[in-house]
Length: 376
Image (cartoon, rainbow, N blue to C red; front, side, top):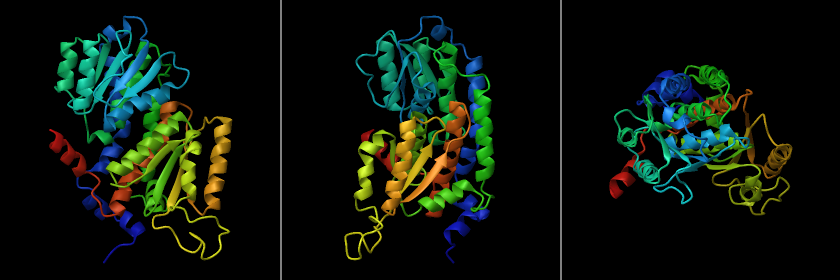
């Protein structure tokens, strides 16, 4: 007998069987990752980084679940950061990167080929280097050869489940450098928020009181277009899309306001929208639902530009006028890491629940492994 979607997500035994690699447990480790990473940076020897002048720029190189750590650092630093923070998801560094800059190479395994290539490039150019990744890895060896500090990440799961273990070292290191003003309680505030959301989204919490299960049920069968309303929630939108891709094997489109209002909004008039509510039967889209309906997901920040708030509100109205369903998720908290945690915890759980809802094991990434094997 096939269980209805909500019943499927509320069957704890089924959730356990459908998630044999324990991705839900890996998501639940997020708070512990924050605390462990903050301690690791506090205990690390970063003398070679803090002794010199402030870097001209911080360049973070990494791929996939590790690479988003650089986006987190840039968003937490915000526009007030006195140095440029940029990310590189490639084999080579930009031509302008040189000895005046700090390059942070992030790889959960410490063996990501693009990251190793970019880190070696940084050493050749005389950049200051910081490595973040697995103990005893090729990246750790490269850092040792370059007399560069290395922060060990103890992976409790797949790279995509290690966002906090990989991101917090970057934020804490930037604070040690004096380029980021992060209060001492910022890490504990983020950890507490992750614990709060984890309690709400735990597997034995039923769908009508579990926001992650409810979100998975809303998204199922739709094409999510996910928009952040600030640089911080823009990172959360990108994270959401990537988690839907990897955990759910599910398509999604990520964007951020105001930019999305200059391009992605036009999709509201395309084949994935039902069309204006006043369309006559027989008109294109007037009497039938699209094959895969669009759903707009708005990730609200507590610190939006006033014009972005107006854009968010009107975007929602325009979508609803075209019979596009809208979901709004609001960040909570005051500090950037805390606000990011409030959204990321929810969407990480939702992506796993959506996979299970669709009968998909969230762990395997067969297409990625096949591609790696083909180019090896």
